Each structure stands twice: as structure tokens, then as C-alpha cells.
Length: 493
Length: 64
Image 1 (cartoon, each protein chain N blue to C red):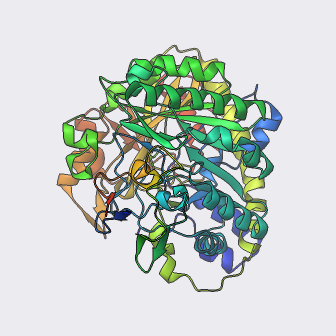
Image 2: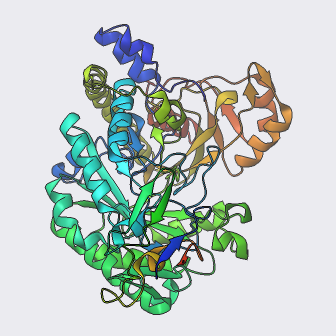
């Protein structure tokens, strides 16, 4: 594991507001992007209240808040060609992969242990392997136990939708106000290529009939959630040659039915995974194909462009998984919830994010006012807190921002290998980092040496640590202003 | 007649346990086991064996 993303010592050894504030500024989120960016001006205040602490539904929230998944519902009623539920590997990070399955009581212990140690924890999700709505008794038992002990934690599920209509009323009763449905098609002909079978109403269905039933149940479930005001995110797996073009149609259908967010994810496929697609040579899209499709989807349901496709037992801030720190056998048999760290952290974040929101809106206003008409792609090394605060050589990923007359938008991330490990910097790795940064104009980081800086420059990528520890938006807007000859704002932090 | 679970292939997802109309399937020790005395092969209850229909691994829930 890498170092914790936030200094927990900071929260255990002090209650001084200023010191906590420093902690919140130093960390917050290992990744920097998931969900909607910022609080948009036209957002309904009630919706904002729901998403503001949910890292997967709000880009702004994910700088500060963490989620954890518990794998309590392993049974599934749909077979997907990209899934192999026998697979288990601690070194793999992708949906449906898990190291240990938990009973509801074990899950409660784990949630309490994490809540006591990870002050950023705000969301508990059940996201496979298996289906949370089909394996409903275990899902419900887990949520009831956790809600009793930690009443303010947000509950969230991910489902294939087949059994969803049967449980919408109970989800509402349990205050589950975020649901993700994986919808890969709205045409059963397409669905038949993705789903070999479903188990529904006590029998197995195959082919087009299976896909038709699944489609109808997904649409019904989405409509029922929308009617109850439960926010719904649609996950779609982009499978080139199978449903890539079709996802434009999917976006239209789910928009009409009130979906809040659409997350198009690349198919992850490898023969070693043992999935049908992996074994039959179906491959995922490359970054360019992904972005082309996402750009075509703009204007429909809002897109989430920065999902990390995390494990089904992930713990921590998006982009970093601390799950291995909380393996069940490392947790005592008896654990008692201590809310002090989470409460102290939440108080600090409330103050810090007011400052951040103001800085962001000022930065966006300046970029829009610049009227240059040009775009800039900026890659940012961040350890979270919404700031340029990671060293170039320590970054495991760079957040990519597009700055244009439309404002500042987070458009994805580039995963890289750490160029410097244990004080040694590896030039072979640097070549890989430079390749991963293709198309980027400028790299922002907290610190960078002359050698990597020169090599980046040779590849046509400028890098600077001049904006270290500024808010990302403040730094990016200042850069934009400098680039296109406009009077910059004073960078504040 | 009864069905059985090939434990070495079973993912232990537990779907068969709650689909079984005869409450014949239990997690015992380290594996799911079908009690042959309780298993009816779903005769009179359903057209197909529920455990075998829901099992995600081919040839893992089979006639004993």
C-alpha cells in the first residue's frame, strides 16, 4: 500500500481547527474525478444536498469523501459475457473482483472498523460480485445493521436491474437515495450478444427473450426510482462492435426516464480473466475511442467521465484502494463505532469546501471571460483536496482538465507507473509516463526535477511546479490566462 | 432422485440455497451441500430444477 491519502495522525493527535484544516488541504482524494463537476448553478438544492458527500455522484465531493464496498450479495440472476465470478485476485482492480465475501454481520464489523479509521468515509455501497437486488436478504440485512450503528452513512447499491422493481419501495424505506443500474443496451438484439442467460421468475431464459425481459425490467426499475426521487446513475460497458454506437440510443432512453448521470466505461477484457469476451478475443476500446463516444454523448444525460472501475470490495477515496488494510481477519471480533474522527473531519471539510467552491467559480468565470476561443489540455498531479499537491515522480495518475471558452472540465485521467520509487527515479518508467501523457499541453505538479522536465519538453509537453498546492481550478485558470495573454488572477490557496 | 453440487467448481454464491423450494441446500463447513433426502428435483414445484437453472458455472449443479 502507498501512504494514506490523508494524515490520520493529524486527526488523532489534535482537534485544533487549523491543524485539521491543514489535513483537509493536504489530502482528500487520491484521484480527482468522479461524477459531476462542482455545484452547477442550475442544480436543484435538494439534489445537491443528496450528492454533495457522494464521491461517485459528485466530482466536487470526491475530493473530500470516500466510499467503501462490501461484498455481501454474491448471488446473481444474470450472466454477463464480461464477468467471471470465480475470479479473485488481490492485485486486480476491476468491478466484480473481490478478495473475501462477507456475511451481513462481518460487513457491519468491517464498516465500523473503516469508519473509525477513515474519517472521509461517507458512502457504503453494495456493488457485486453478484447482484444486490437479487441477493436481497443479505443486502437488506447489511443496510439495516449499518444504519442502526452509523445513521448518517449514505447507502448505495449497484444492480443489473432485473430484480430492481421488486425492491424499489424497500430501498426508499431504507433511505437508499443513490442507485446505479448497469444498462448496456435497449435493443434485445444487442443484448443477446452481451447476456447469454438470465434467471427470472423461476426459470432460465436465453437469447433475445432473456435480453428483452432484462431490458423491460431495467426501464421499469429506472422509472420507479425516478418517481420516488432516488438518484440513478447508469453504468454502460462500451463493447466495440457490439454496443458502442448503440450507447447513444441508451443515453436517450435513460434520459427520458430521468437518469441523473451516465457513466460509460471501457470493457475490460483479457484472456486471463476467464470471461467469455476475454476468451473469445473481444477487446475493449482504447482511450481515443472512449473519448470520441463520450463527446458524442454530450448533451444527453450528464456524463461521468472519470470512473475508476473500482473493485467490489474497494475502500477509501476513489483512485486509491485501502481494502487490504481492512481484511476481515485483521479486525477485532468486537468493534464499537467511534464517530469522533468522522465528525471532526466533516466540520473541517464544510469550511474548506466553501473556500474551494468560491475559488473554482472565480477561476471558471475568468476562463470564460477570457474569450480566447482556444482549448488547453492540462494534466494535474494531485493527492486530493482539489489541489495541485503531488510530486511528478510520485503520481500514479494524472487528472486531465480541458480548459476552453466553455470553462474548466474534468475529462478523464491517465494512469502511470510511479517514476520515482524510494528515492530512485527510473528513466524507462519515465518513457511510459511521457507516452501516457500524449496530447497534453501542460503538466501541473507540486514538484518536478529538471531532468524529467527536460525530457517532457522534448516530447512537446511543458511541466511546471509553479502552482504547487493551489486549487486545481485556480492554477489551471492562471495558466490559461498566461497562455493566451490575459491578466491572471492572483493564485490563492 | 436428487441433485448434487460439484464443490470444486462452486463459486459459493449461494443463489441455489435461497431458490431451493425444498430448503434442501445448506452451507456446511466449507461448501454448499444438497440434502438428498430433502431434494425433490423441484418436481411439482417448478418446471426446471431451480439450483441447476440459477447456477452460474456449467456442469456444477447436476443429477447425483
